[in-house]
Every structure is written in structure tokens, then in C-alpha cells.
Amino acid sequence: MRSPTRPRLVSSALVSSALVVAAAAGCSRWGPPGVTGTVVDVEGRPVSEARVRLQATSAFTLTTAAGAFRLHVPPGSSSGVLAASKDGYFIAGEKLVPGRTDYRIVLKAIPDDDRDYAWASPRQVSKAEGAPKACETCHPVLFSEWERSAHAGSAKNPLFLAVFEGKDRSGRPTGAPGFRLDFPRSLGNCAACHVPGMAVNGPFATDPARTEGAAAEGVFCDFCHKVRSVTLDASGGRPGVLSFQFARPPPGKLAAFAQLDDVTIGPDAYQPLFRESAYCAPCHHGSFWSVRAYSEFAEWSASSYARRNVHCQDCHMKLETGPRRVALEKEGGIVRDPATLSSHVQYGLNDEAFMRRAVTLSARADARGDRVRVRVSVRNSGAGHHVPTGSPMRNMILLVDARDATGAPLALVAGGRVPDWAGRGSPERGDYAGLPGKGFAKILADLVEYPADPRLGRRFSRADPAPYWRPTVVASDTRIPAEATDESEYVFAAPTAAPVTLRTRLVYRRTFRSWGTLDRIKGGELELASSATVVSR
Image (cartoon, rainbow, N blue to C red; front, side, top):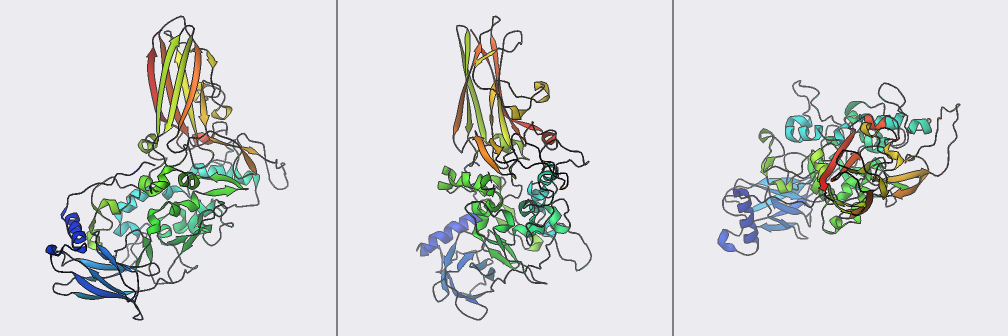
């Protein structure tokens, strides 16, 4: 993740915000002293420390113990809205009226979670008159962004399902380990992250291969915006829905949590958690058999990104465009500063440019006597966690290729070689094991061996590397932490035909080539960086 650069906008809305802040600091020359009022609950009791904001500006204040507030409002804001919010309540607001200076804002408490709530599809499934509006109807831009994201496909991801079942869409074995091959009588907890809408009330009893309804949309709008809080298990033993707390409304009611504290159109609630890494952690902080498999959150927590308050959303949901409306204007959407919003593209493996920004590759070489010495640096220059990260299947391969003037490869005299998990066979077909270079991955090894048992349908076979759902140990971890640099050196026999052409490549794969056909199911390999140079003797 890169440190975000917040765009600076010169607009009347932001100028008004600056005037409000100046007035709040005592600059009365900006206009009248502002408005006053109280924030109370539905029974008329004062709500202290509620945040009262002039909608879509940076001007806000907190209420006193008596629920009272005073907020300076600059000239020209008479058509704005005063919005009040506090944890445990829905946002409420009052429209500014010319000449009025005293306001009373009533906050309604958020109801308890209704476990029988039926998730709403993000798609408009019915156009009949009176049919409920879906997310795509009021928020078409956000919907189109989400639809392209990996989260939208988490339940139907062919690679995920192949790993879960041990076979591809056609039912053919992949030659790779499969969860159901090892544990045919268990559904595991994979659905807790991949199919959370179904798993929320039964995380260990949900079959990811049998999704239906809104839950088949993967990680979808209604699910995310019903998250009220997160209780994170430091050990990583409660992944996905096991660490989320929800506020699903009773029948006939609506509710949504988000990062804005001034949305007054519907029953929305402010939740700053939506801009924090802890919100992402339940599905990116998981252990199996006491071995950390998914470690992105722990890696981020130990990095300088966390110390600089740069969160996952600042990179993976950074809004690249200018001012925008969250909802259509006819649905009450107003133009907002992009610094307060998030993109729902959720940049990751599906965005090649985003992936390439994570690493920097450089190589330098010199020829002396009968040797050509090559030094290669791979820097994690743009990710706030290790690279690669996520599932232990993810891996990177560094290839160092030195050739003479005829195109013949030079013999490696000293230096590392690409490990076996990159695939043995033809380099032209992507089997890189044994070539000069190295691999970057978290490698697991089987701790115990589950015997095959035809009666149970168990077809366990030893795999190298081992899959994370088995009892394992971490055999090695060569991944590159945030802002760290990996240095490696290679010595080749100097050619008789000069000069030497040196080419280095860094490629990324979603899974191990040694795991049969699994790596061909989705994406293949992605070249993250490359370099080429000619070395004169």
C-alpha cells in the first residue's frame, strides 16, 4: 500500500469549509456567531459528545453534557444541513433555515441485531412498482466499481472453488491439494470470508459450493454496511464473520453503517471503523492449526504504515477521481470532497498497474576476468505488508538470465536457483525451477500425515509445499516486508563471445506451479517488473 496523497481542491465548498473553521477559531469577521441547539434522544434526554457537522464540510463541533452545541456557519450556507451523529445512534439532521439560530436534533438508537434478517441483493432484481430499491439503483457508480472487484466474485472465484473441492469446474482433479479431499466430512470455515452472507449464522456449516441469493454475490454491499464493530482475536483464530458484529434491522426497517457522519437521507450510522485496517482484519488475519496463514493485518501492524496512520483503505480503496456524488442527485446525493470518500474498486490482484507499483526491481553487473557478477535488488516500495501476501499459495519468482553474444545462456557458478515449487519442466512453458534466481513465498510443510482412507473418501497425499488447512509448520518465509529490500548475488562464467546481455524478471503467481493445473485456472502469471542491460567486457 502506498502512502496516500490527498487531492487539494479549489472549490467553493472547501473555501466555505475554511471560512467555517476560521469562524470557529474566533474570527467573527466571517459573519454572525452561528447557530446553537441541542441533540437529544427520542425520549428527550440530552446526548453528550455527539458530533454536529455542517454537511459536506470540515466544520463540526461536539455537544456538551447537556447536549448543547454552537457551530459557526458562514454566509451562503443557509441552504445546508446540520447533521448529528454518535456511536449507537442513527445520523439525524435539520435543514438550515434563514434567520433561525436554534435547532433541536433527535437521534434514534440503533436496534439490536436481527439474526433472521434477509440480506438484500446489490442488484435490482425487480422493477415492479413499489419494489425495494437496490444498491445499484441509487449508487450506480459505487455498484459498478464494486462489481469489478475481487470481493464481488469471492463466492464464485474458480480458483477458490478448485482449492476447496480439489477439482476444476468440469469436475476434473487439478492435481493439487483440495480441502474436501483431505477432510471430506467437513465444510471448514472457508465460507466465513468467501461467502459471509450464508456463513454469518453458521460459519462451520456452510458449503461454499452451494451459494444462493444475495450471498452468492460474495462480499456484497448489504453485508459490509451492516458491520457495526469488530472484535479481533489476536491469534487469528476467529476469521471472517466470527470476528464481525452486525446491526441487521428488524423486518420492514433499514440500516446502514458507513464512514460519513452527515448522511441524513436514510437510516445511516457513522462508523469510523470503515476507514481503519481493523475493518479488513477479520478476513486478512487468520490462523489454522495455530499457524498464521493469512497475515496481512499483522504485517501491516508491524510496519511504518501503521505508525504513520496509513490504513488498508488508503491504498486499496483510494479514490483516484475528483469530487463526486455517493448517490444520484435525485436520490439526495450531494457533491463531496474525494478525500472523504473511498473507491469501491478495491484494488488488488485484478489490477496489474496497482500490483506493479508495489515493487521495484534493479540489477547491476560487471565483468572481471572469467566471471560476470550480478547483484539484484527487489524492494517492497509500495505495499504496507509483505510481498507477496494473502494466502500462502501466493508467490513471486525472480529470474536472472545472462547470455553471450550468440544467445547461449551462461553457466551459473555461484548464487541461488529458483525452487522446485516454481515447476520443473520446460522454462518456455513457465517451469522455472532450477533456473538462476530465487523464490519469494511462505512455505508450509506437513507436520503430520493424514493417511488415505477409502471408506471416508479421503485421498490425502503429501504435498510440497503443504496447504494451510492441514497441520503444518512454516518451513521458510522469504517474502519481503514493507519498505524492505531483498539483495541477491549471482556469478556466471564469462563467455568467449562478448558482450553479455543480462535480463532480470520478477513474476507473480496466485499459486504454486508444482500444484498441478491449479495455477492455470485464473490469471496465470503477472510480470511485475523487468530490466535488461548489456555488460561489456
